[in-house]
Image (cartoon, rainbow, N blue to C red; front, side, top):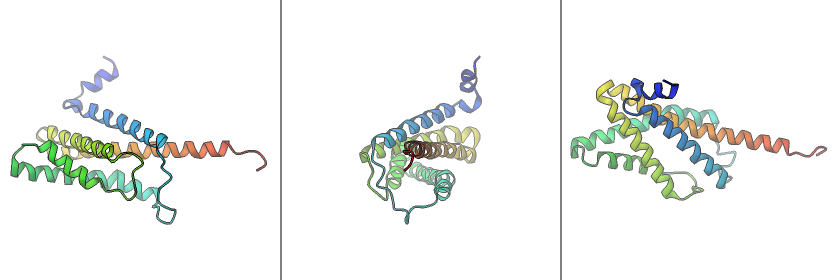
Length: 179
């Protein structure tokens, strides 16, 4: 049995957690790479308005996954109490995608793509929580769902930092001698 088969047969992957994790990371890496390569990202905030990379990383990697997943699970719990499970996996991710959609500047790509992407990410987070909450408990299922959210945000930061290093190296090595 090779390593991939062992991982897929592990207890953690019983409900597809590892598969979802790999899918989210690969999709997010491809998505952000395409945005960086084909869209104009020079319209960001000026240096006066920009925040430290450490503040952004702390918020995106620690606070956002925990708070957004807690809010998502709260919406799902309220929806489940009022309407039972009818459209649970449609309404809650849509509400979170709508709340999450506000951006400070114009997006360099169609808004429909971002809204669809947010919906499917929140759908995956909620589905993983729902699949694991009875087996391992609500708290651990919440942390598992937050780990998926963390991986998604970490992939975005990693890809953006790698492209930033590549652009910096390109400008350094393209300098003409004597200038």
